[in-house]
Amino acid sequence: MALANLIFGATAVALCASVQAQTTVTLGADKDTTLYESSTGSLANGSGQGIFCGRVGPNGGGGKRRTLVHFDVAGSVPAGARILSVEFDIFSAQSTAFLPILTFAHRVTQNWNEGSTVAPGPGGAGGAATAGETTWLHTNYPSANWNNPGGDFDPTPSFTFDLASIGPSTATVQPGMVADVQSWLDNPTGNFGWLLKTDEQFMQTARRMYSREFGSSAPSVTITYLAPGQVGTYGTGWPVNGAPFQLDVTGLAQGPTTLPVTFTNAPGPVSFGALFLSLELDPVGTPLPLGGPLYLPFAGPLIDGGAFPVTGGFGATLFNLPGGFPGFLVTMQAAVLDNSPLGFSMTNAGVLLTQ
Image 1 (cartoon, one colour):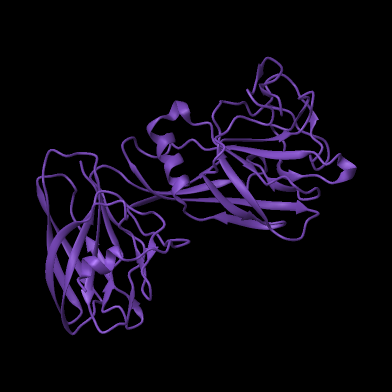
Image 2 (spheres, rainbow, N blue to C red):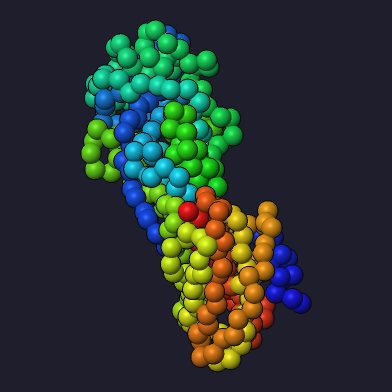
């Protein structure tokens, strides 16, 4: 079967991807707070050292707790960049629950204030809201309201993750995370952050996480991106003799130009391969049966980048980048024939953003 047919034949979806790309930044939250379920909207904790998610126990009335968290993406990532990968981290400091709980992150659709209230004690019951707080009913207490009690947000989660009862939690790259962060970069006035919530079915599932006011272990996002003209690599190549099959692309992605593409630790000693191109990237990656991930999206289309010889585990080809097409993300990944069960192995992905 032709290599292209083998590539198009895969259907399973991978859970995560390892990222190596041109620029990676980690941003701490620049505002966060808790929505405390309340019929009067009088509870807040905008400047407290804890943020809460889940439902409290019966002694606390069983109320819901939802977290709001915001990151200033446009302040740290250059305009025109393309987001490749996003990871979200948060740290649980206290909970009466034992097991992690599935948590949903929704894109918030209305602006909100952090506020200055510091709730007494651990903060789980909230404190008396003062002017400028965000509450269950208000985006700016007491004068501006949510359209819906409990916050206005896209009903479809952007991503999900297991929130630990105590300790760190990480949400690895998911397409919705990348889409949100790209949107916030391209349209900063529409960046209202994420709302974190559980399914809110059971009491005594709430946990206290460290807020940005705590300092260390505050919520953060790690963003990998390409600025216009940059090239880089993404993901991990399939193992060949115990090490990844590696693709590297070098140069400046400003056409018209010719960019060298090299392959190391390739199957061999003598073989040939084919380079495939796409104008998009699958940030999660799709595993081929019995093989490693494919980072070229099935939405395609895929473009045949030509064949190249492999000798002694090394190969090389050229990518001709035309001029006059700025702002396109080009992804490339190569397959080389070998004696593995599929009959070929694939590299990591090369990425470039045209300038």
